[in-house]
Length: 157
Image 1: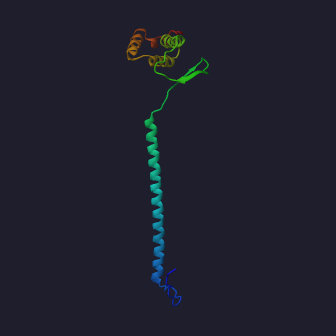
Image 2: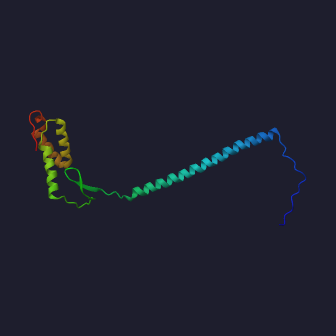
Image 3: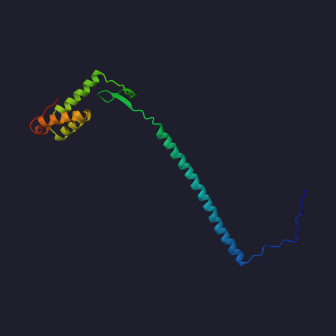
């Protein structure tokens, strides 16, 4: 509103010398490099913030500790019968104890024709016992030596 008009005496073109053109080309090159550097810097800090946020999320997720083990009871064909979260005070039923005990006895007492199967049975039997039970199984294996009987006899329990 209260501005003075700019005084123009004539439209004079900008003086153009080879030095000014070279300077303009140089400014264009450096200017685009500066703009690219700014864009790369912006992208880097954006990715750094994203990575930090994801890392914080992973730390938070792992600190929650909400892993719940589940127990799946299956029948002899492998079909699921009961599915429930595992609890600390779980007591197996008598048929379950009997089945696992029969399997343990079968793995220890049976002597198959293949020594690899016998070794696998014994390793599975060791999975059932504690350290003291492993010592008892070692003594039983030393006295009865089932591996020496592989070629001579076969026992199925």
